[in-house]
Image (cartoon, rainbow over all chains, first blue to last red; front, side, top):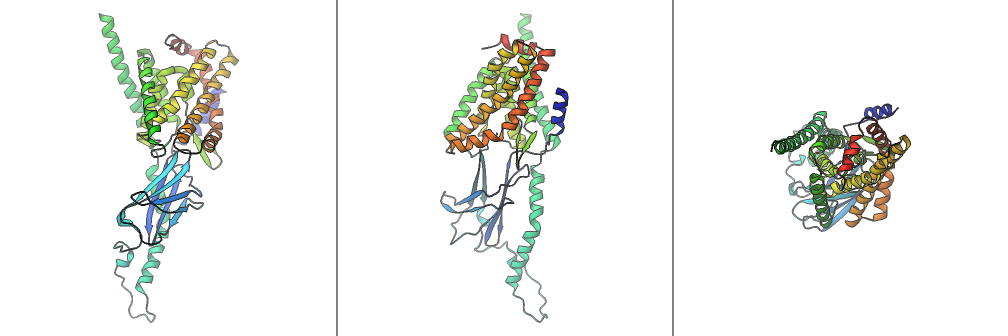
Length: 192
Length: 205
């Protein structure tokens, strides 16, 4: 009976999970989008996210939706330097993300698709606004990439079986070394 | 159960590190040659136990297995659990290096206390006696750990009642499971290898 309980417990183990916070930020045009969740696959639902500048001044706050997703559109001009996004999920879980200065929303962003040369068909009857089109394309690409980005984060955070075995091996090796020194000291004492 | 980097105030971190250093000193002094293999096995067991998740509602908590370590090892549980925590922080990112001291004392001190309280009762033998005190030991270690985690959070500015309630309630399933596991382990040890408890008796503080 006891063994049954023990083996049932061991079988139900899911070694791929951990209570680690996964948080990610990505600039999305004028806004900053991000995602907060746990590596167990649960997302942080309705969590408050506060945004600070480099010197600790609070710039604003937003909340995550039911998928742990949040978006923040800065008002007014942003200070130079990186932004810090902090979300306290309670019970000792704090997510902290830093948005590098070069990724700041708005302003001159050479990396946005606006810089891409668009080969528009100039013979088409209706003139197309290249800027508007670029915005649409950028939004569409962002939406398409979102699930892939999420999966990438999950893969990166997965605890591989080899890591676990490696950890156990390290512990045994360490205690083996302890044992070696301790035993050889004892043998030396016995010889005296 | 593992508090992450950045959640605690600096004085709490320093106090935790100091307490852990003290616990390690006591534990290492008692780490005799005979006990090293046992400490190694329990350290590895603790390292893996955190990967076993108990789903509750939309969230999940993991096993800790500090009660059994305290029961068998006494103060030696401190270095054993510390090494397990260190490797968890390095390999899985559980907790973190700066909070290692706080996490170690939060997990190892309850283990030592629960072990010291329950071991003398278990040593008396008797099936029901061993099973009852074994399960008390497993559950008590977790309960004390949740309280210590709540206190660490409260000292860093979080509302105590709210944090304590959340952490304690979410760990009730863990207490039940670890109580059962510790009772089973204690009973098994009394059957096949009572020296594990007898040995600890001679080295008691």
